[in-house]
Amino acid sequence: MVHVRAAARLAADATAGLVDLVEAVHAGIASGPGRQAPIDGRTRGLTGLVYGSVRGVTRLVGGSADALLGLLAREATAAGDDDAATPTLGALRAALNGVLGDHLEATGNALAIPMALRADGRVLPLEAAALAERLPQARPAVALLVHGLCLHDGHWARPQPALADALAAAGYTPVHLHYNSGRPVARNGAELAGLLDALAAGWPVPLQRLVIVGHSMGGLVARSAWHQALHTGPEPRRWTTLGTDLVCLGTPHHGAPLERVGHVIDRVLDATPYAKPFARLGRLRSAGITDLRHGQVLAAASEAAPLPVGVRCFAVAGHLGAAAAPGALHRRVVGDGLVPVDSALGRAADVARSLAFAEADTLVAGGVGHLALMADAGVVACVAGWLGPAGRAADQSATAAR
Picture (spheres, rainbow, N blue to C red):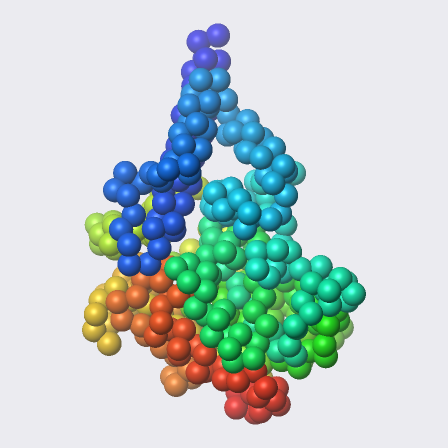
């Protein structure tokens, strides 16, 4: 009986620890670029009350992590998929999915985020008639924004929807991908490839151009989707003929060294509120986190995934120093606080593993942290300049890529 009680207490403590971790991630994200997250890793106001209540209930009943997830799942079921209407739950679900999304999916938990294309925080139907009704002002060019680990589509709009606004002003219809970032990157990539086929087939007007912007893990998911769409099956998927550009913001193409715990890494993680909680993720093993740490794009780690041929590919790296040209330490370790500069630019010591980003198609943003890459004014202006007006013909983009 003593052992049973001890096991129950251990489960409750583990659950509370999980809540602490998720809340710390949430607090760092919610603080936004350029703002200091709470030192104690706690959120405030109604959000803090939610987390505090979960801890209290967990310790009171001595429940397990699965019991906690079941409780939260009932809230998710009641709220439906409209996370825009419930931002606290939306951020909590996104963080939980990043930390243990593969477990949520395997156990059929309602907290597992189903992959969907969204606009204005609402799921887009992919049937032609419903899509035309939902987007009466759809344009023939789509810009797909793909978020990273523990985030969701709403984070592109913080502190303001700068990138989506810039792309809309250039003639694109912005669309967001909402997905479970704890799943393997390869599975998310395969599912995204299928969704883009359906989007191209059901788009209200003839689709002429598709550009994809991926932040962090989002860049890996986009690369995975492109590779699988081109090389899996008897012929390339239709949407790949429309895809002209891929932009990767802070993407760990060669991994993020979060598992190398040491004095330098601790100092780096402490330097940015968003990255700090991720130091604790080394003790957790969601498939998404594992793939993120090693930059794995396909199911087989040994299989290479070069940049798609005929597509203009761009890479942005951030680094926490102010100098325009970061030194060796920033390139190999520090970077934007989560992803080293060389990894974000696809550069590897083994030339055969390096990605072929043209020098002119890369940007190193000084003083810009990992999360800030999504909304930094200089980065937004650079991306908008790279992509240019939506009306540029797809064949012109492909010619420029070659």
